[in-house]
Image (tube, rainbow, N blue to C red; front, side, top):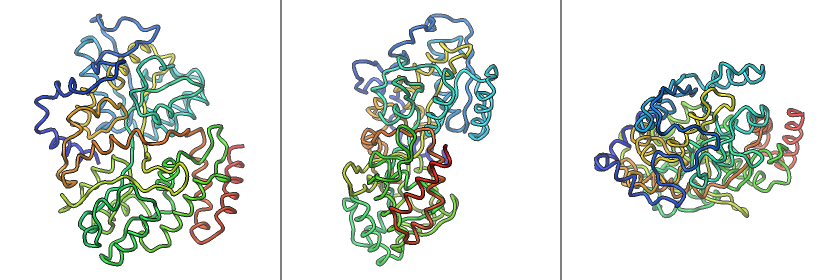
Length: 449
């Protein structure tokens, strides 16, 4: 998936890379940061890592060497300019293996084999922080968190303490086929800031006039329901980890819209990732509502360059409903008992936490989109993408990023999703939504007792 993003990013950068360092200085920083590799506020107990040439080795665990691992390498190279004695050992694990090794070590209390730095999926952050107190370093004063998307900061915050440096994001958009839209008599402006009900109406006309589906539906994948919920500032569970299925207008409306999508005839049924991807790479659907990271996969569609555009996602037609949401993302954590805790903290703070130059390189080499807001002021992120009809797609996602509602993911998101999946077939088959959600609430409560 990352290869195509790299290709388009390199294309976007063709006219700007020669001035890469100057584009960093063109960004308009907030008063608290100068967008260099020097952290805003060093940890109170930090050693002087800016002047010493002594060897300083930090170990980091992550998954996906082409994306997360490469981001670490970019950061290492940048940090070494001011810290020539610094080296970073990157341990590549699958996401499943990383989480299993971390959980096993923390549960046993044997933490000697854990790294200094570890990548944590945002949806799991609260569970680790709460279940294993005093495991992760308090990074509240490591960087200026006002420079990050607020919903990302919320995901790594517990009891007013911040434990992670926010990294990549999954800010969502509605990718659409401009040729199908035009054939059905619509223009791109007809997709701007619409409700889901209007989306369905447009989908019905596209299906009638072009024979193409508007989207896909997969009852075993909760991605679209998660996007809908967060767009209204809601989630499957409450901040105190209780089920959030009843007396929740956002949940009720999400289920109504999801059932309408499935029953309206505009959604192509799929049963897995491959079928989902094939649906748009083969030209079967007119839109894809997904995270920004979906760009690379969309670009795998042969002969489709110039035929795609992107608009804000539809919103739930309720109070608090917005046209912005998120799908996926992760953050960097430092182990509190790590041998090189101070150096690891300074490394993350100076690069991931405070460097536009880092994020310019990250976009160019990995297609990575960040939660560090000052980076988007760089000219690099404003370049037009030929594949998307000349739209400045990264500028658009940057515009929507601060609009994503902040939510508490809590400790039991997966358990809540599993409970919903158990009842979702009944909802899709016409069961009373309120009664079905009461059933889901009871099932969830039994699971987490």
